[in-house]
Length: 124
Image (tube, rainbow, N blue to C red; front, side):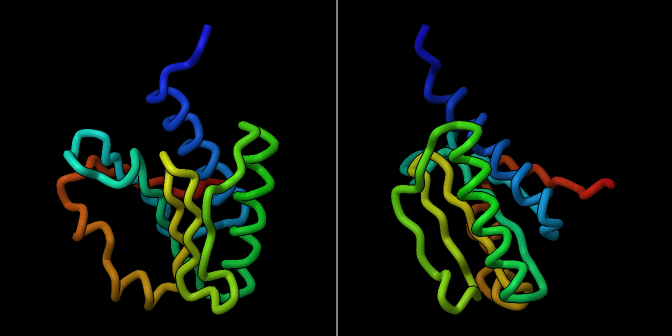
């Protein structure tokens, strides 16, 4: 039986959140864009971090964990060098790893205010 696209993108989004939580990303939020006409993807997953080192660790963990759990490789990735805003594009899920000030400046959640929004809180 072939999985539906919705299930694939939702599962991928959850794996991204898990990978972020594993490296203690802050303020993890998913935006469900599936009901917005002309949206660029199904989900945005956004987090912020206090340092470039942590941004790199989360980037590496997302790539490794998603590959291990789903077999997916990103279509595109950028921003790794300066680590102010790292983007990982899995086509149906786009991952945004921000430095705290950069996230406040771009404020993607307000730009996509019509999207369904879920926040994930870190628990030990």
